[in-house]
Length: 270
Image (tube, rainbow, N blue to C red; front, side):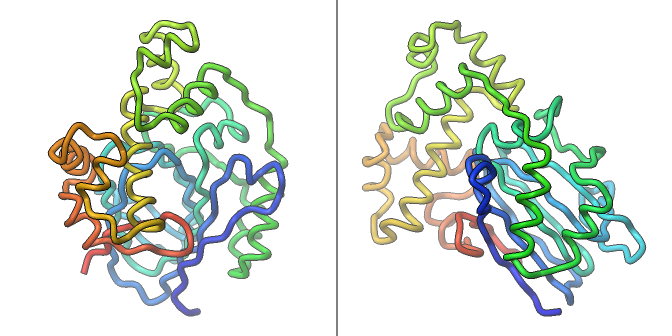
């Protein structure tokens, strides 16, 4: 089997409202692999074919281990990932409030690794192919069978407001528009998304600047980018990157690699 990293999108009309994309990550000859990924407003379920998670959080291949399923919530900090031994995993990347449409009563404050998001027969089917067309159909169907419409007008209106006004944002403005207190709004975000309203906005703004620089205007300099996104000054822009990536903007982009056809942008360690 060859090394593969491939992104692919759902085709089911229901699923594509809530799932941004899937990706297939195979490294058959891997000995040790490390990378850093960065805060995102999306969250993920990762399915590893035969792995265990060590006490140091390293994902280790073990021939006779059963599949390992882990949910990664919205992250505020850099996520350092280490994989030892060969890797065979499939990842579902959900839009905000996406996973809530399929799974109930999840705790969004930390990783979830003691929950069977898929049953054994489904996992066996998922890992029986590397053809993304077939995988798309399997994942779409398995998720659709769990679909239970989740609605929360407070969150839906707030998230839409943030995406529409990420350059001109305040918690007070959202709470006034929706007609609830800032405290209640923050509690709702914390419970259902695992982060505060302010932090969610910061992550959205961060990812929008990445998308602009990587996929729309790579020649735009950081001063122009900071001005376009309504930062007070260059130092405010730099501070956001330092807080979320532990790098200056220049260092962050120079070290990164885009994987697949979506917005997966990691720092691959040598």
